[in-house]
Length: 402
Ligand code: NIG
Image (cartoon, rainbow, N blue to C red; front, top):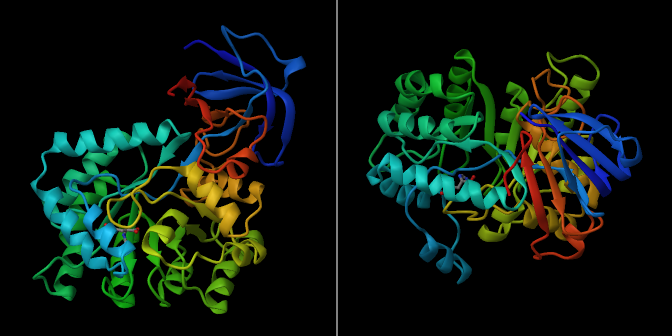
């Protein structure tokens, strides 16, 4: 593999362990990782040279929540919502019907199109959930296809109780034979812990069964109303609890406690439970935004993700998510950038402190060489010029992809 020097970077946001911001910077990509990062004047030679011409650079986005393997369209449901209808979990069933009928190649083509769309907007890592199969064979099919597109596959058999099924019997299926069949194809297990989906006890059963199989834990919690999802995620040591629209002070304290324990050496790992916020989903479902400011102020690691899916958030655009977090959720630009890069990597336990090979979300020697250049002199333009397509170039694992 040839090495590449990218030089004359006007502003480099590294999100490295020292949170360095460099001006007139350069990086060398070699063998899929960053081999050198520093001032352009000190840069070593490389096989190839790319002149960034003063553009801003930052890590590729780490989008830690997506539901990309599906068929069908729910634009009519969206239109009805914009005319005043409520978002309800039951819409998932419409996508399940279409997904079960689709061929593997149709599902692959849909995912490939969305991943390509995301890459062209700077996304270099995506978590992908199952959850539109809800029977053993289709969930295995979705996990296998998801695995063809990335290495962060999440089993979400507990997305909705399928029409005509008994909730407890279906939970037993998910936590038993379905988990047995899907676990070899997934690294994570997730559950939609919400009124209209799975109760706290059903969610606990699914998560504990997944953990016993060696899967990491993720939770959809407190999206449509107050509930126990946050407390359950914190209690079980989930890597992330996602949505977080309706949080009480006790929920924020519970999440902050997981970080106090991690930082104080009282938990097994270096991290607590990440709060993953999904502002594009909040807009599309007309839910209140999650309390980003309060979470950051309480010491909780926050991630931002696009939550691409056909029902609640049909977008792959992390620049839109970042701009919304700054303009509407009271995060500073740097907090939003961190949440969309390093925060996502923490939510996937792929950041520099997780002990993972080739960490994600930071521009630092040894990290996977995921980098984006903006058609702007500074990353602040992502929020200053919302809606303007600013992604100029994207490298993923050292390969130029857009
Ligand atoms: O994360 N909330 C549950 N699951 C998805 C939405 C799925 C759908 O509506 O199809 C989400 O928003």
